[in-house]
Amino acid sequence: MSDRITLTLRASLAHPLSAGAIAPDHFAGLTAQEIAALELWDGRTSVALGDVFTVDGEHSSNVLLEGDLAQLHDVGTTMAAGSLEIKGSIGNALGARMRGGAIAVQGSAGHDVGTAMAGGSIVIEGNAGDRAGGALAGASKGMTAGDIVVRGSAGREAGARMRRGTLFCGSVGDCAGLGMIAGNVIVAGAIGDGAGIGNKRGSIVALGGVRVPQTYAYVCTYRPPHVLLMLRSLRARYNVGVDDAHLHGLYKRYSGDLAEIGKGEILEWQTA
Image 1 (cartoon, rainbow, N blue to C red):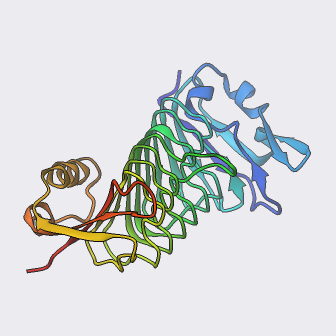
Image 2 (cartoon, helix red, strand yellow):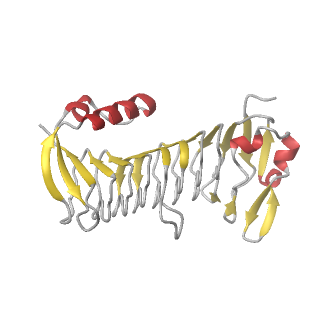
Image 3 (tube, rainbow, N blue to C red):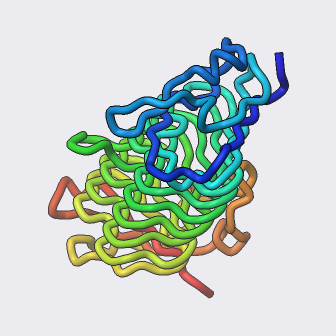
């Protein structure tokens, strides 16, 4: 048994590959030869994992990926345990339908990070594409549990149709929290237009300001205790960019989306 399994890309990828077979809990019971025999997909054509990566280690649920992986998609799909560290950037659908374990990305990630995620954590040091923490195409709900931290920027529709869980981003594009059912979207910096449109019961916490949609109504300015607890936990677990002023400061509370059932909220931190 190895402490860690290391997959190192042999050469730059000429075409996108679907790599749903790469998930730490899938590897825990496999030898190096069995891991190398797993299939990756280029459309309808399969290729052996060992033809794309060198495999060092076996029988471990701790996995390290190395190389230029921006065209490698679906990594960590349905993973339920273990740890996955990615040195560099990664493609689309990272951690889709993930149920547990931890993913850490030293670079950036593509679209659909953590779609339909149901547990575990994803931490991205760089940026993420559209629909982080969102829903699969045609699905009625997005992530239902777990934590996603994007230290850089996330694209459009971050947290779309989110049911539960927490998404923290340095900044987000338009339509963050689109159609949220519940859960928390926390943004340290800039937020694009249309935040919280269609929100039913979710919370959007804006630490860097927000353009509140007209379908929200101002309620009060106060110190929300649940925000204190949530931010303190995120800072302790993931060292996110939250300072004491955010923990103890005042927040304007807006209720909405009033075009829906109106039980969601946008909380905008107030500078001194």
